[in-house]
Length: 187
Length: 275
Image 1 (cartoon, rainbow over the protein chains, first blue to last red):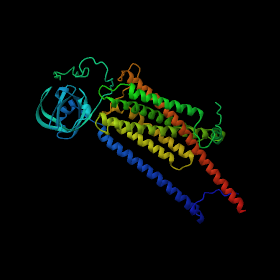
Image 2: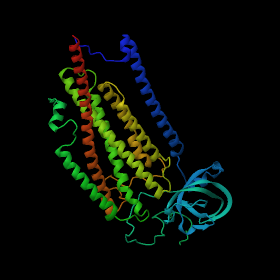
Image 3: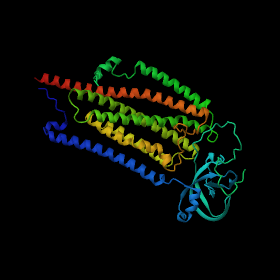
Image 4: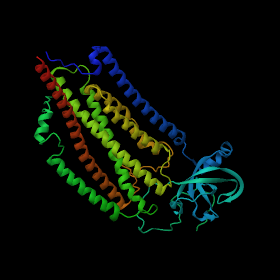
């Protein structure tokens, strides 16, 4: 009969059980290391993600409604930039963002991304409420939003740059200000 | 239904010309079509389609980014389907002549699952890279842990794990079953990735193409058709690579079998010489 048993350094000792034990241990270690790595990677991604993903931003109207609870805590604020409100003064960009007819005055301390210049672009700002008298298109307010990080939240709409436009590019998106009890000045 | 056994793999490979070849007339034709399609796609995406009104030329990244994830989705769905077939073909109680046939079919589906998952991982990586570049230009950041980006990177890591699991040494039937179970668990993340933009607030925009009949179309004219054409091109390219990968996996199995045969022969020779 031909001997077809597997070869292994331990084989010389004739201890088949030891060979099996060693192979088993090695395999278990590899599987264990792999599962551990997978768990660490998956867990890290999930934790990092869940922390931010569930409430990635508050819309302007929600941020105003939750002002007391938010206090001076950092959060993300979302709204569309009012083109006529943008002003730059010594590295600080001031403007207003609107969502659901609520307007928030913003003081942004870092250079905004290029797309910020597009009229009525939705942006997500990171920062906190700071007490201070301000006047917005919606009236007087007791706080402004101090921001040090801006993300442009572009929409899922795509249109050719050179297409014939109907109306004014400064015009807000259709229906955006329809229910608002205030007028928004144009550029 | 009468099932015909698959011809011997070695015979198949020898008929194809060589044990190191994965090409055939069909794949060569497919390859030429794929390369030509990519050429036309480049023309459409870079020159013929217009710049976007808001994003300018950055929108051209969409023609790689969006089709990449569609192809990746397709790859992962195919992996799940093939894995279900593997589990079905290797279920306990399958034995005898039918068992041999079932085993061959299980091995075939296992190769399909492996090749499709590799494509999925490759195109998810492409999605992440192009998305990150697109994000820098439009959002102003390469990365944010929003729901879409987080679930996508989780998808990528999970299937990397799946591919690693396939490489762990084990008896082929056990390995195939173990991988198949993981593929069926991993695919649960797919609808979560896709609908994350609807279920949670994300920096990532919502789906641009509404595939429901009568749904709104958010992309105009040439941009829309360029996107559809790019998707078709990516599908052809993926198919081409996928067939080759399937054949490489088959050749790997053949090589393994051949080396085992060689070892056995060597052992028999030694035994004979020792007598």
